[in-house]
Length: 138
Image (cartoon, rainbow, N blue to C red):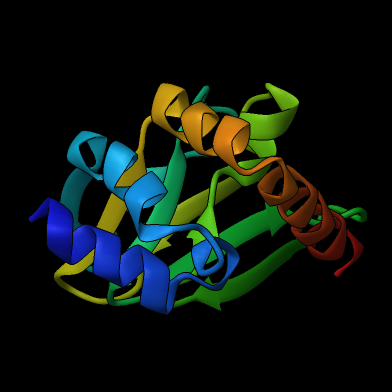
């Protein structure tokens, strides 16, 4: 399975596509696979998590409390990720994430493994910070 994960990360996850396969192979044995049913909560706003999550199959909804109290909701699909804000800023999760489809598969890269990637590829942190700024602006 680690080889499959390496290929998936390299070909389907834009933010990781520039990382060398050999570097990705160093962390793929640590990846956890979880499958969720439609409506099942993956992360709850306020929860503490420092891991990095990638959608391998299906879709998730992201519900963020808006500035005026009204929720902002959007969907993420295959190859998209979440958890980067709480991981990099060392804060509680600021959105609730739920599976939109049955059999939604999410890969979890543990914090320590993701830190290895950041050390090998410092430019990755800059790319994530830009993504965070973009998400906070929308």
